[in-house]
Length: 168
Length: 390
Ligand code: SF4
Ligand code: SF4
Image (tube, rainbow over all chains, first blue to last red; front, top):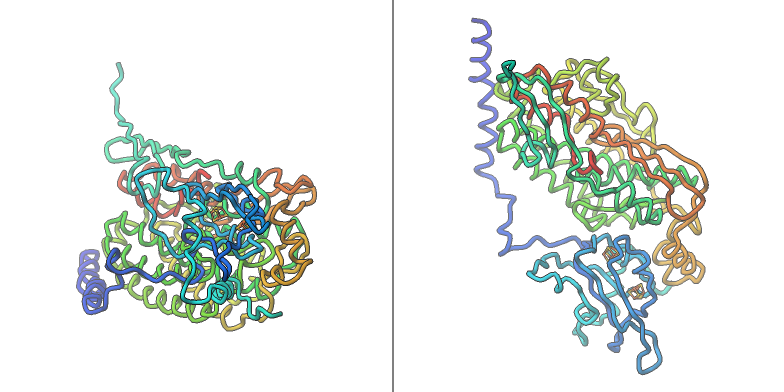
């Protein structure tokens, strides 16, 4: 009898607390997003799909030094060098296999030229495996741009690494 | 022919309540469990072996993928082990930031546990509430390391980057959110008659048994053993923080639930202390040739640039010898045994996975009980199959 009374008391006095929680949430703003229509802004450091940066004059920053490929834990980067018209070294071929890539950001950290960055793009499903080999042409961001890319890069570097003063 | 009295049943590997791909072969006599044998290996990825083929700093990314619900704890364990092997002192700020992040990770892992455990037992809405609160912690992760799950933020010798500018604000927001959430969970579950009936006196393990099975973490403390590596063997500056070890009494699933809620509260306490007292300083130790120099130096100083190239391409050479470093991960004692052989890759990395060892006690927990309690027992162990199988 005592047991039953106790359980009864529970049901009457304690269980409604749970219902109150549910009821309270009826009047709250939903935390969910209407995803494909509205997207969550990613953090500045977010590690999405890669892109390669260019200098002001349109030449690419990457010198094909291979540090990113050496740092890559997933061995996702492949590159071949060549000489440009003005005698500078650059990448003839630069491929990232996005199927192997684990988006660790080590390439970004390793790059001494601030050439490769991981962008904010995270939706890249496709029907063919081939389309996941991301090539140099696809990664080189278009040029010229409205804002000064040099400033933009340093903004990005500042955000990512916390570099405070570039004229040190 | 003797009359067969028992039925053998396969539970999993694709059973929603086995938290991944655990398979349990259960022998039933009616509704009673006579024998239960966990079968593992469906998620085996050879992480330990992979780590041996990577440079020390590269092997870090593998640790994220073990216990994917607590990436920062895994990073921390590995980094502490390598730092011990290499004899690296990290700055004080790094220690405090690591403690803060590790405790956030504990909360995050416990929240997922709470959500999935209660969904196993039929409390559907819990998962939504816990994931709502977990999101605020994932926001901190994203701001720090740039990834929502596989952060790789804690690195050998420090952190990957400086803490983000709004770190303090973001963490405080997460703390507030979790604090509010805790009240909801308590109202929904702690006094819920159904939940109590499903978990009280289920999956009981006594203190002696828990020690004998070498359980750790909430599984051990739930039985009343006051053992926490953060107190027993402080690492990363845990001795500077004021907190209590939460522990249960009976060692049943309900005790472990209460204990994990208490642990979340204690973690919130630690995080608040860490935020208030966060010292100033560099975010990485300066150890030339071992720890990557800060990026700004690489861009403007020749010497740093050379070290940067050398570390990235060849890594660093670790001395000959073995170290063992264990941390108190959300699931228990998470240890790394790393053997260096003088080269730039570890000779052997052995992980002591808490989920794996705790899971071994599953037969002990469920044999003799009801079949439907197997789900509760698996849930209350808090396993992550990524870590069990590695
Ligand atoms: S992206 Fe950077 S690290 Fe990679 S090859 Fe180009 S310059 Fe070198
Ligand atoms: S993000 Fe990591 S895995 Fe992907 S290409 Fe860069 S270094 Fe390799």
